[in-house]
Image 1: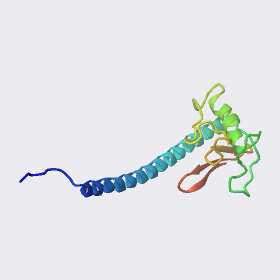
Image 2 (image 1 turned 90 degrees about the vertical axis):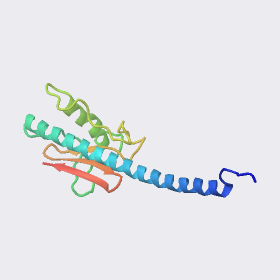
Image 3 (image 1 turned 180 degrees about the vertical axis):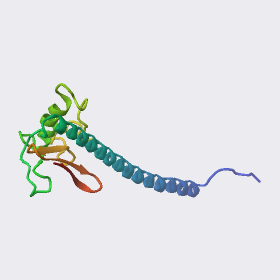
Image 4 (image 1 turned 60 degrees about the vertical axis):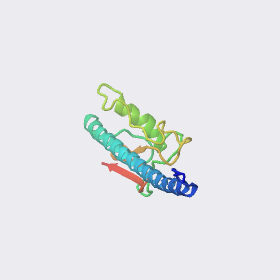
Length: 156
């Protein structure tokens, strides 16, 4: 009598299918963790910009950098997505960047970058983009979270 050692084909298929099912659960959990991490980064980025804007306001005769048309009647306060002058995404990338990173006393080394759109280019990703609009006396910072949608930070 020979003593055969090893696994049958059925046993191997069962083990491989169990490993496949468990790995698919791990991938789903990992994607959720990545979304939460990007959202936490976005919240932190906007908190930094808000702090820098408050310092700018104190240093510049109680005025914020003006750009675009602030409209309290729309959810994004007029900080729309676009590449033209006065749009919220352009105001963030050009006017706000120059105000907070330039001058005699720069308040930031560089403006934070959106994790899914580091160039803040609406042609690359028009959903996940940092936006800014201000009439000088008040402002709105607008950004999108993956789990809870549009977010607005207002200052006045």
